[in-house]
Amino acid sequence: MNISYFLKDDSGNYSSKRLLTLAWGFGVLAGWIYSTVKTGTMAPLAWEHVGIVLSLAGVTAAGKWIENKP
Image (cartoon, rainbow, N blue to C red; front, side, top):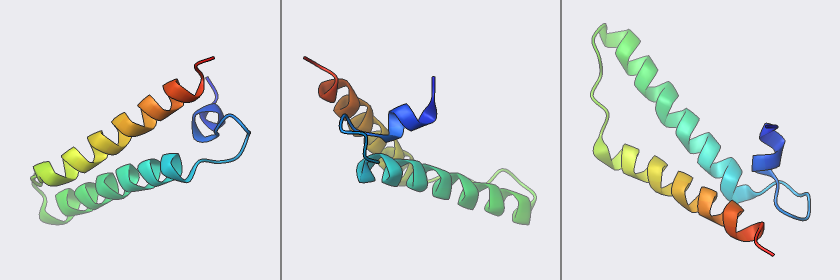
């Protein structure tokens, strides 16, 4: 599957909601990796960050599924 299929809406334009989800997810991941490398131990990840990423991903996935319904 092509990643651009997931990032575009039905009219072929990039979806800001999907790009935000991707940027937020990678931002949290990068911050966690940086903290882990800098301290030398497995850094804790706040449940608030996990919840935001999962809720954004859920809304994004549901939005794509609803768009493709006839």
